[in-house]
Image (cartoon, rainbow, N blue to C red):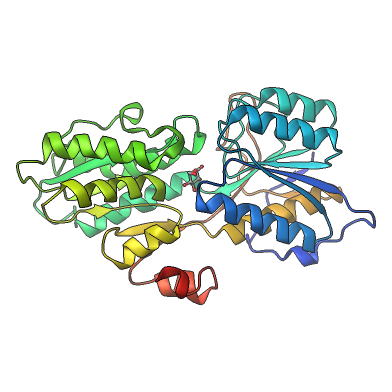
Length: 347
Ligand code: BGC
């Protein structure tokens, strides 16, 4: 497989790709319909791949690893020429990936890295570490940690340990905040900060909510203020926000998120969430469609990172798109003016 360090932009139009006369089949495997973003990712991929002349086999796996395995195996039996996979659990698709390799089918890991396999050709994602950096920096700047006296109280909710991204998000944010924790300017009253302790299996809102219920009940029932709650994404932020609403009486904290899901954007407008990291799913889909076209046409495939994403077997050549933060001040421009949402969707 050919690689090149050349890609400049994410937003390349699918229409520009030259496709062979007969339609090649692209299998697109998505983790779940339960979270808004994967529906958007799937829809965008399908639209753009079809516009580029490909046939598309799009499947959602209900967050069930065995379902995803058999869906991918099916795609291979049905003659997929390229596979695009957003894994439920990065390490659990070995059998399907072996089968893809035996059939010489290139595989693009979509958004989440596929682990423990040499049958992964490329990885396309938003820069996961940078997502965390953006969240951590938002907390640092909003609390003015370099100048304010503090100390400030912080709690942390991270993502799914089975999703390789979750540790990058966590680490990016913690690397920004750690110096202030070490200096005593940020204090974590629950003492819960290690990734394994703050992780949220399957990114479930209910799990994040019940952990927040426990923390608020145990450490903040006496009126102690929470100044910031670092949440790795919107589904976990939603759980924390529900819990704050039900249990917490102090000054409302900074709450971070990721994805700009509709409910979270509404919460942002209502002052219940401070920011979300915006990862425009249209941008990622366009980039992946471009990479698929390059693979099919035997061209060099654009990547811009050949060092960061080691899946325990190989370093997977990657294309990292750049995430940006959204808050009450810029959400209109980012989300409405760009056509991502209509104003009505956010009412
Ligand atoms: C994605 C996030 C998403 C999370 C939960 C991660 O792999 O990068 O955008 O919020 O999964 O679905």
